[in-house]
Amino acid sequence: MLVLVPEEPVFITRFLGIEEPLLHSLYYFYLHDLSPDEAEVILRAYESWGEIQKRIPAPLRWQTLSASVQAPPRQEPEGYRLHSPTGKRLVSLHAVEVSGEQICWLEACHRLLEEAEKARFGALASALGEIREHGTNLVENFRRALNVLRIHAPPKLLASLKQAAPHGPFRDISLDGDQQAEYATYRDQVVFVLSSGDWFTSTMHRALYL
Image (tube, rainbow, N blue to C red; front, side, top):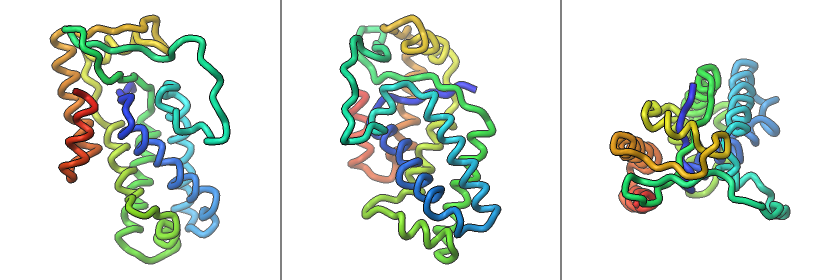
């Protein structure tokens, strides 16, 4: 199935945070401490995240570059430009192919981590405590990024964006009135999923789309 992902820093940060430090650390440093069932879920979720990450366009993978490695200069811009019916530049959205199985493994992993975090005991809970970053709830960020992938892609908007670069032929996409209405609904859903609960964060997030 095709889902839409936004080319903006709030989503990118939360999405990439699923892998590093969360799943990467659990897989490489704590897997041997977990029960076989827990280890299986972590393994499958990590593999699923990796497959999805491979399919997202380069503009959404900017944080995967090591700070010590500079990307080679690009000869032409990647991706495309999205415009409203009046010509206003919009935050670009990208159509990405994901499977139901991949989403299911990620959902199972989130449930497992959430239960361990609530229980506050056991090997997995201890691992989460050691991985935890000051001021950042990694499991909550996982939930929010996953819920963006679960948003139903509006059909008219999706049909237009399937033609966008880098996978499609067009570097400029202009929405019609119906597509703009679907874009606005999708935008509101993304902002709510990623930033609800914090008025300041939600306000700043919405400002990215203005």
